[in-house]
Image 1 (cartoon, rainbow, N blue to C red):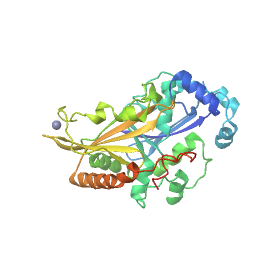
Image 2: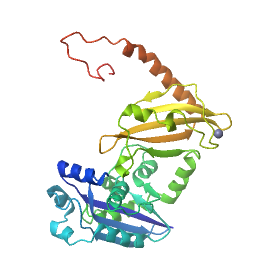
Image 3: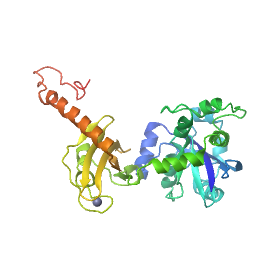
Length: 328
Ligand SMILES: [Zn+2]
């Protein structure tokens, strides 16, 4: 088993250009990869190989000035780079058979996946992948803030003796930090901690070519959320509870299977690039504590409701209040 720390540099386009390209592709493409950097680590977290390629973009061909300034990559370099399909094939060969990706922060793997889709290439090989940022917080102060790689390097007194924002250098620094984080142990424990019944599904993801839902209301009515089947036995679940609309646009509902107990369904709606809606649906086996917490929040939400119902109609000539006016 090998670990591969991955870092990408990507180019962007001005909004109008980016929107036109995404519309044409019917896919999300917030940036186009111009450099892939990676370091391979063995089971003992010792570096044993490295990979660096400059990639020639196909859609956002003009390098933006701030991208060039940040990465040191020039227009001439990317013009002479190899295509993404070639780079991806070489990178896959470098990765080999038995590996897991390690990244600093959650952005690089989705970016690479979007780029592969834009070229109609396979993305299944981009797994498993683990974000080192929360692992760093776990072994240090337990905070949930997103710390920069520089912060972690300073913490371990790793000298920054190579320029940052070069994909290979950053992948190398990430590897040095990874070596301090007891990654294999943290992965094992995370997997165990996660409920065995947890299921996460994406529905209506136009960013990867599925049809999005035209409105939030239509998304909330999908059968996977309103009349779900038990993830264990497939029988229809029942519920006595209302939908809880929680902070951060999350909708939850508690369901029960006569044989397998309680499950908490949480729908998290997100806008697609084309303004339609998709959702992440998360199903967990609900513990007693989960059930108590859910019902308490539901009670609070119901108690607040009369104020909304009795909101005064605006008088003529008065400005219509915005939807959030009474929520403070
Ligand atoms: Zn069941």
